[in-house]
Image (tube, rainbow, N blue to C red; front, side):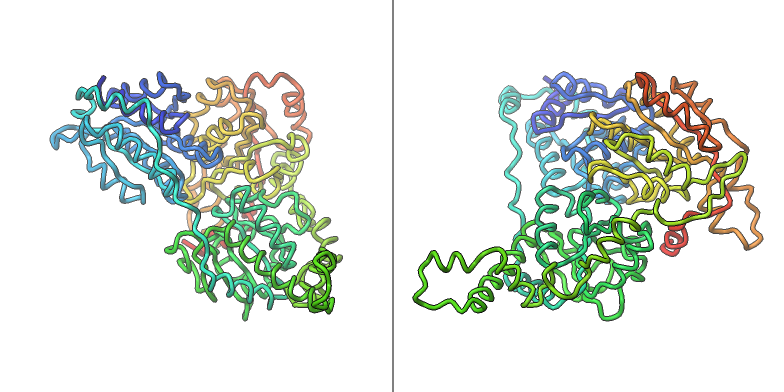
Length: 592
């Protein structure tokens, strides 16, 4: 057995079940070894697409994925996707063949490339350590939530693995995961004090709160304290079924969500950076508001804005600890309020500590909650959230013309047509606010947002990875015309995999963000505008069903496709009105 085979087998034994690749001579053997060991192989048409597919699969499935690339140019082709994954802290392993000979055409400093975008560079150094080093790469990716570039030198790949090392392949196990970080008692006390003093608390959950345990703990604590619930964009859908949810905080916030977040006297970011996007450059934080951030990575605390204080701890454990402390305080209040005599029996004490008594005590103690006489959880707020929170409920003037459809009108119509069990993936561009906020999703697994690097052209590959991670849902890719044509090679991958995908192209024949950002200053726009392209025809060339939409009546073929066998993917070339910027665009460019 050679090292390339041993590494491939070790990666699968360590928990990798999907490998994405454009296969060349340098990654041929390691990729084949992974598929022989049972991993599902997905061939991309471009390494950049393969990187983003692997990223989306890993972040939406909760399992590590592998991208394999050819030495040198294979890695450089993949770097944008790797940068996105690294910035998002995706557990991804990039197995990069490596030419170490300085005079080779394929030689580049692959370790420096990885480090430059925030990935962790590792290397297989020799046959004796190959299995152990492959296992450690997976452990780093999974336990540290990092993107790892595992360099695999060509001369090492072909080395023979000693029999004793081959024997290790039967028992590859990752080291135990570190225990979730519990907050300090002092930090719990500070948080308890903050939530007890707050009358209008808002919780904002980010990537670090995007788990069932964290979600449940945050809902429980919010119910106890009267907090409203919001998310950053990457955690959209986390509180989808909660009546006190504000959906996304930040540039995508609806007017009602922005109003309520701005009225908060306490904002807690739970595994959320509270960065310029999520807080609109601080505009959502009112003067005097207490701002707290909870994160298990100490470097994240206060990295994007000044805090009243930070809490170093796991989101789920911290929320549960605060809830327990509040409940203990409520028990004391209940005992006092009930004037429990020392002679009462244990049964009588238990009777005094009913849920009603605890809830009443929480309200009397000023911890918020629906029993309190103040706060944001009022019947009026509940009614407004039910009728006015969603962007589709915000009145707008339909700008549809005879040959161009308003993107809001388009997206609302598609939201009604498409099944609710969906996974929506978004590319970057002027259009992105429309599908992000007008298309509903069933939960946090229904939204895949590869926007940590803000690169145009990742959306289609994102949708492929997300589709593979959620095979029982309809995959929906939302792209601009620029991103669709950048990533068009992966139309072939969608068709080849037989994915029943809906691809929506918001086609304004331009890089719309730049058009609107520089408009009004007498700049020439011919560098960012293009002749009309029939993207539906392009898609039909790849085997899609292609539909051109200029008005709502043109959506009839979409309904027919949804009602049919869905044996081809569907692309909707939506010719959208091009004279209006997306509402989030001004905020976006303030951060450039």
